[in-house]
Image (cartoon, rainbow, N blue to C red; front, side, top):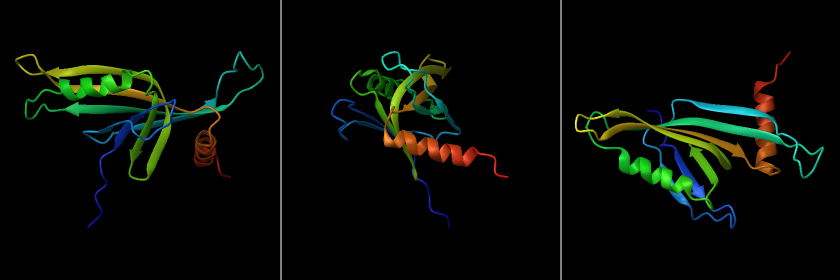
Length: 153
């Protein structure tokens, strides 16, 4: 019998202290899709000629209680509240052996389905997490990405 993979989790951490005491969320449903992008960052105006590599992870998170007609508003709002904290822009996404540590770049939330009484029963949150510029993690991710998607002849 195969070992069950635990649900993915996301942790919002303090950028300044880099502490591990951030707000942790277990994702209700594992993401159906993860999108990795890699490329060069735009040139920094403060340091002309200096460009780094950028790796970005995009995902869609689904909050769904449509079968039991329960509201997803509370858990969705808690997630959004943690993401709005300006000091906790560092985000760590972990799912089984995959761990991506970066900065929250974009987020949007949509309530997609409502019960007859008007309460939201399904929500989707789209996230984009970018690698931290100049970090070893960024360089390692770029190297792995390049190796994974290079044409082998």
